[in-house]
Every structure is written in structure tokens, then in C-alpha cells.
Amino acid sequence: MSFKLAEYIEPDFKEKRFVNAPDATLVRAPHAKAAPKGFHATSIFPEYFKINGRWHLAEDSRMDAVPVWDGEKINVVEFRNIKAGDMVVVGRTEDASQGIYVHDRCFRRDEEEVRNTFAFRQARSRETSFTQDYKELTELLRYEKENGGYVVWVLGPACSFDTEARRVMGEIIAQGYCQALLAGNALATHDLEGGYLGTALGCDIVNQKQHFMGHYNHLDTINAINTYESIPAFIENEGIKDGIIYNCVKNNVPFVLNGSIRDDGPLPEVFEDNYVGQDTIRSHIRKATTVIGMATVLHTIAAGNMTPTYRVMKDGTIRPIYFYMVDTSEFAANKLGDRGSLAAKGIVTNVQDFMRNISRGLGL
Image (cartoon, rainbow, N blue to C red; front, side, top):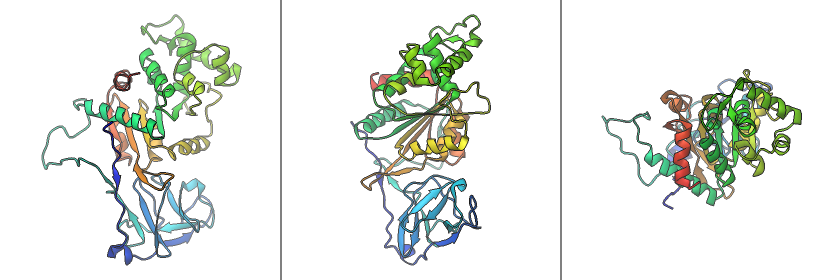
């Protein structure tokens, strides 16, 4: 395999700017859910904070959160998780001058991208050639499987609308290329509708023909699952034999379903409390080494907001986190960059074609 992780470049803390930098300022949070004025907000990059003369890396970070010193290490917490009296880092420079350093050029790759003052085809669009992206992604997935990586897939309902896309995603889960799945009520509903009635929103997942009164099918599926009181019980009692959620249940791969104001039902496993759902998503993003979002802008942005560019491994090494966004819309595929996930790579295509390419590359 030719895939190689990018090498992390440690800051040289012997440089004068680091040696002469003051300690970061710590101010107590005035009350729960509120930071002191001038608080520092974290980014997607590795950030170091000088406390008692020593630089500390925030090992478990995310964007738009708050660094809190617990006496031993920096914890990065959401505003809603700030406690009164927490020692919050204050300061908004990022160059070490306030004891805060944002390390944005932190990975060395074998081939640095050539940048010209003027050049064609620089955007990620329908005209982009994605052949190399598929090659790199399949090599990455093999690497993650062989080296204990944690691949998180974020799926929209369109991933279950086509029988081949649904099959390939099921195989990805079964073959160990998925360690957690994040989605909403709709993905699980339509995937299980496919296993139960052979449709997604009443449309046949094989030949795409409408079933008579098919608009009831997803509601009948939700009703049947709620009658059994759980997805696993429904799968067992109704003899479901394939699909995305089926393979999660069969292979003990955790799936996180978060609710929406638009949901029908919802299914028993759907988190109806948004913040409980968000905490559950982050529990998986905290372990993620690769994140792949497909055909769901909002869920992918939600995951992206929790995903830094780096992961501190158990042995203390630091590696990159890879992030992909797959969508038919150039706007959607590139939107994560506008929302701060600057390292996300967009692939502009439909789910079915994406899955066929991944299937070919992985031999599924």
C-alpha cells in the first residue's frame, strides 16, 4: 500500500517567541454557561497554551469552543458545559504573544501542492477529476482498517434510495471500514423501509417504480418499528436480512440518530434532545481519524464543527484527521470550508456513483 500519513511538525518551543511569551491569562467563568469577557475560542487546528511556564496542547479540541484549565491539562468545552468558576483562557491573539499559539501549518506531506499566481480548475466542481481522490480514499480506508483507525460515516437518506448504494454501504460496515454511523431519523427509516418493503419513500429501490399507495410505506415502517419498541427487535422479528442499519446491528457498529423538527415518528433510537444527541456525536468524533459525509449538508456540518484537523493517539503521536464531503451540489460539497472546516475535501457526485467507485476500489 502506498498510503502514508502526513507527518506532524512539532512547534520549536525553544524559539524566542515561545520562550519569551507570557503565561496565558486565566479568568474564572462568572457563572454556568458563560465565559469571561475576552475568552479565547478554539479552531480546528492544534492549539498550545502556556501555563506555569510550560506549553500545553489541547489534545481533544473542536472549533467554537472554550479552553478551560483544570489544573493539569486544557479541556475544550462547549459553552453549555462551562461551569461557574472554571478557569477559562482569555486572549484572542494566536501568535504566542498572549501565551496562546495556533499551529495551523502542522503537517508535512510528501508532495506539497504547487500553487501558481494564475491557474485553471482550482475549485472543487463538477469539472474536477476525482479519480485520484477515489484512489487516495480507498487507500486511506484500507490503512484505517489495518491500523486501528476510527472511520465515522455521516449519511443522508439518499444513501438508502438505491439498492446498490445501500448494498455497498452495508458491506463497508460489515467489512470493518466503518466504526460509527451518524444520521437522522430519515436515513434509518428509509433504509429499514428498503429491507421491510423494498422501497424508499414508496419508490422501489431496484427499478425506481412507485408502489401503489407507497406514500404509506415509510409510515408503516416507523409504526412497525415502534410497535416492536426498538430497531434490533424489528430487524429480528421481521426477518430483515440486509441494509445499512441491519449491518450496524449485526456487526455491533454504533449508530447515532438525531431528531429534526421535520421528523415523522420518530424511531425509538432517535435522540429527541438535541444536546444529548450532540454529546453522543462528539463521543464518536473524539475518536475519529477519518470522517466521510454523504448527501447531508446539516449533519455533515454538525460533525465538521466538532472535528479538528488532528488526533492525539494513545501513544502520544499526533496524526491528521481526514474529512470528505460527498454531494451532488458544488455548494454543498464546498460549504464546510465556509463554516470553518478548512481541511474538508469535497467530491461532487451522486451517492450511487460514489458508492460504485468505492466498491470497485475496495473490491466489495
